[in-house]
Figure 1 (tube, helix red, strand yellow):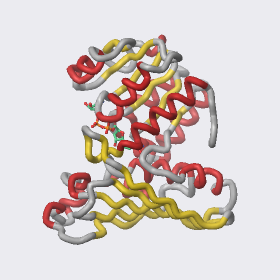
Figure 2: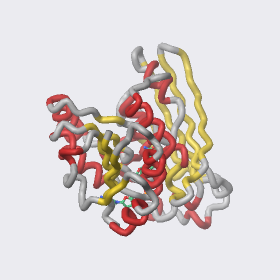
Figure 3: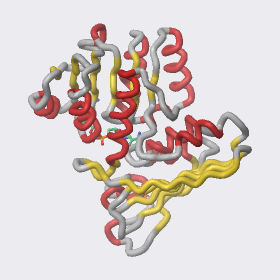
Length: 268
Ligand SMILES: NC(=O)c1ccc[n+]([C@@H]2O[C@H](COP(=O)([O-])OP(=O)(O)OC[C@H]3O[C@@H](n4cnc5c(N)ncnc54)[C@H](O)[C@@H]3O)[C@@H](O)[C@H]2O)c1
């Protein structure tokens, strides 16, 4: 299999290095707006070459992995699926717009391309997926994040909250997943994943709490429905190079790639 990784940051790097060790992966194309980053990464790998953009080797590529930004994802998903190439999306918030999502999923079906969305930084998506086969009444995601994770977020700054000065746990957002993924594009991609799997962006409730004493990115996923109730907590260690990203999200991308290349589906 030949793969292209778009975005060689925190997730892209860990994924590329893991893919380099997978016997089933024969060639890895790397691209990043910061070309030096892609070149530095490629120099440490056996199977990688740097390309200018995702289109350059699309005819020779079986799977594109987006690990860049919501804007990048929005721009590349239509191009990739229209060529019948599969894509794994990490910036899941890119799929919040209903018209856009309908357009790309229909195009993917028409061109026989698959869109993969790993579970990312949250646990419990297996239960959510299964329970959504019946009636689901409530889905709530509570994110508890530290000052480093929430610093520089426009929504928080515009509310007059100085995350560096908070001394106790404070709710900085409470509302729909639709608004949360747009206002916190780098923080709560998991809200998009949970919405897509469950009851949608408007019925999924998201609460974001800033905890001055935590260094972890925690998520609590709570469900109520015909199946019963679920309450699943994840206490994530931040990725070494990007405190907004949880280590587990890179691991989930690596594990998704492993399942795809080996065609092994356990616990789906
Ligand atoms: N699904 C999840 O649970 C989850 C969890 C964490 C992060 N994410 C998302 O995954 C994405 C990657 O996360 P990260 O921590 O690796 O980010 P990062 O900031 O460490 O790396 C992103 C890389 O993408 C590059 N880039 C930006 N725009 C680009 C473009 N148009 N084309 C090519 N490269 C581009 C940047 O130069 C950077 O090297 C982000 O959107 C992040 O919000 C998703």
